[in-house]
Length: 211
Ligand code: T5A
Image (cartoon, rainbow, N blue to C red; front, top):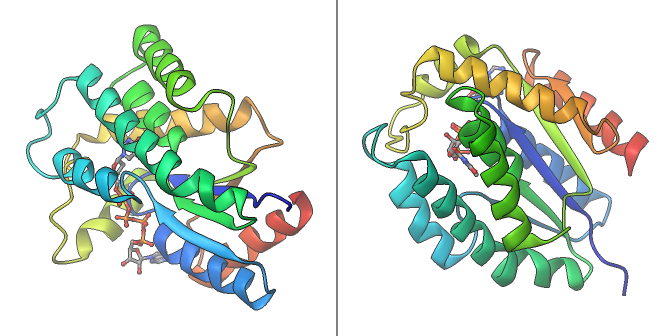
């Protein structure tokens, strides 16, 4: 049986990932491609329990190393319980965030710190080896616009990272762009400032060209 593709969506706060993933999944389903939509942190029962620890509460709740370890523990559970079995069965898995978020947020967000970046890389190798997504969309948007979009929604108490200062959000945007520039074959950077339909069309175009 052919393995499924692993496709991830990344970007800063309120860049429109969830909106676009829904449209992208519908597009794949119309083409008859079996697919599974999931998210990080979370996606499996254990990882969803860790999600609540990470996304609720004070911005300074965890120190950086603890934070990397918690995201990585959640990711390992998600990979073992959900992502790898689905790919083995030939299902295409689409994840709302994955390991590039850890590099951008925990590696670059707090300011470039070689030790943190090294730790993010080493921890990933430990939990996932050489496994990586086949294609990653990075939805790029000015942090001021994304945070406004994100904050405008009511009833969301998972806003620990939205409340980080603007420097943090600029650092992580630059981090995502740097990550993408290191492997243009795997990463498609999408301008997320356009209309929902415009962004969707750009994503489809890149998908059809690349996979
Ligand atoms: N995190 C995560 C880490 O720090 N390290 C890690 O390793 C991982 C995995 C996860 C948080 O955890 C951090 C990053 C995050 O802070 P999340 O559930 O992914 O949280 O939350 P967010 O990234 O904040 O995602 P959101 O759901 O808030 O935003 P989305 O998915 O980017 O945006 P979406 O689609 O929900 O849209 C937001 C609003 O904008 C509108 C939508 O209708 C919605 O109201 N919108 C648009 N408006 C105008 N034009 C467009 N093109 C629009 N697209 C969407």
